[in-house]
Picture 1: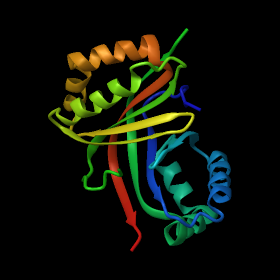
Picture 2: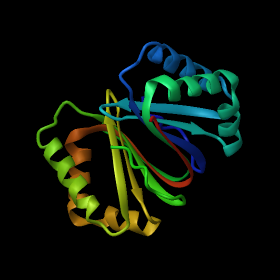
Picture 3: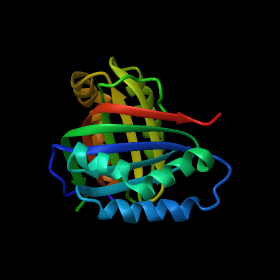
Picture 4: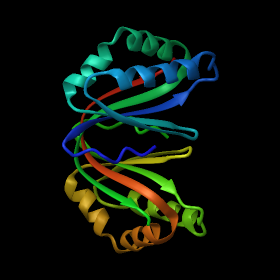
Length: 106
Length: 106
């Protein structure tokens, strides 16, 4: 779902991934991380899509909220497992959202 | 393809979309816009994925480069058509990339 109720400035984490061929446990963990992130203070929402490339963008109130989620124990374990098993390659970008435009057809 | 050669700070445009049921001409125009964007001064790269939601992130040297691409005539025409025909809903966010981390498995 598109996250469309936010007011800049806030933060976005763009997580671009290429998966490996070994995906046992991946989807379960990804879903669990989405649930856990949503319980974090300062979490504002998440958008995801996957073709050959996966892109997940999570939105946060502050850099501090992002750092707290980074240091979450379950998240740290999942990230280690991601690097060991599930991800062939990824890029993670921390961004400040400065402006925003929306459109919805009638 | 993941864009992994950039050095923060630079800018990202996160374009999250839900398509309509009328997609005649969409893919052709989307490909053409990707070609045209890549010719713009200040263009740094693009990442795309689509499931139910589509997410395209384009990367740019500056806000000025983003505004020049916004004002490109072919792009403006494509955007108008997008709102009339192809997009049910979209959200566009202009962000400053502040930090970046990458991983690639051996």
